[in-house]
Amino acid sequence: MNGESAVLLIAEDEPLASMALRAQAEALGHTVAAIARDGIEAAALVLCVPADLAIFDMKMPRLTGIEAAATTFPDALTPVLLLTGFGAADLPDPLPEPPVFALVTKPIGLQELYAGIERARARFRDWARDHDRLDDIRQVRDRQAEIARALDRLDRISGPAATRFLNRARDERLAPVELARRILHDVTRA
Image (cartoon, rainbow, N blue to C red; front, side, top):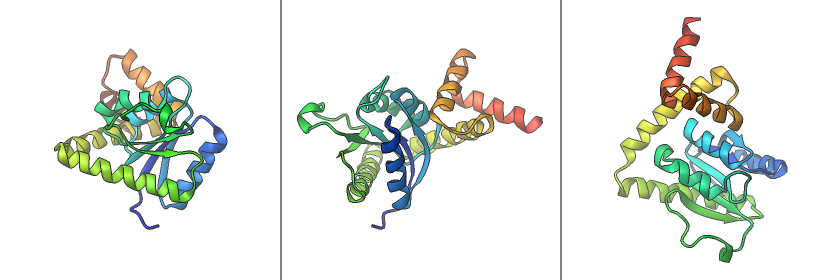
């Protein structure tokens, strides 16, 4: 298996499953930027951290994987690989593409994860090209990188930290990237 390495976000509410998924992703040569424990944290991470792909469990507390993906995709433009323990009959038809570009059924082995990641990334590249969104994606990733740097200054990048950051931006009536720039400016002046 020699796919191109990627930066991943993982959202899985079961701690053992999350650790196993991280280990598998890293064994495939990918970097896991952060892990969320529920759908709200997953949505916050996707908005705050530049990633090549988000891997969301379908059934999570507070928001399902599909709900988290759908609420963030217009702003984050991060493709989602959805993990499910459900049978095909229990899933929405069709799956919302975008943001869900591939689906893998649990239990997940290394081969299945590899194939799902590759399929999701390829379908997202095709979608971005076909919809002329490549420049938009670069701009979004630049904003996310600024936010991730600010989060790293405030706290380790995590789902709860991203959620707190977005709540603070909302409370201060600032766009997240504006709050990030202010934080980075204040830190460099100190």
